Length: 195
Image 1 (cartoon, rainbow, N blue to C red):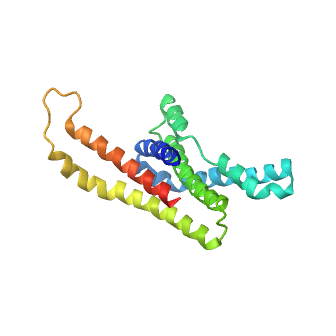
Image 2: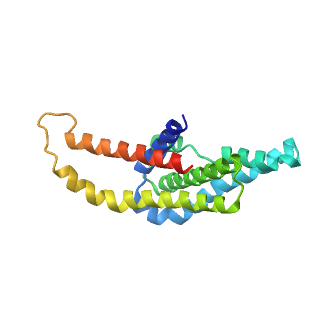
Image 3: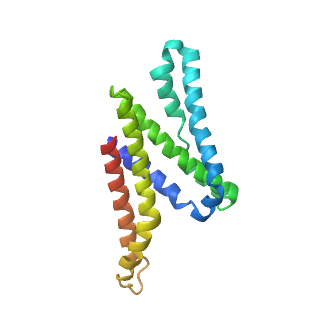
């Protein structure tokens, strides 16, 4: 079930990534990063503080940390729907919100990796640092593949697939969808193995 959950989360992040305009990210990147850091950090801090306040000072860690990790993720799907309904998805404010939500979710996934490490009893600082670096490296690999590798390889591959006259969905579109889903499942599998 853990793998199925990882596939589901990966699909949500993939969908949000498909709505991001990377040209606008260049202009909103720093603002979106600040919003994402606050969007991850403030719920984490408030989760710690409120758990300690309501349940006693001995509950800040690990209970408060777990509560903060649960509060940190945003709902990118809801953000996309609201921005689409308001016809603001492609505006500067919309792209800032979407990029921040996307980055916030990535930070939240890294927090989940840390929480999982802590829950398994791995409180060794070196293990936590290595897992954090591995999570961000894995993310970096996804960015490199999505921004520079796939855009160079896929057009060459897809142009070799002939068009089908009268087909509502072209075979090349089916192949592209298959490659996207296969990449998603592969990344979800690797992510679940990493932790």
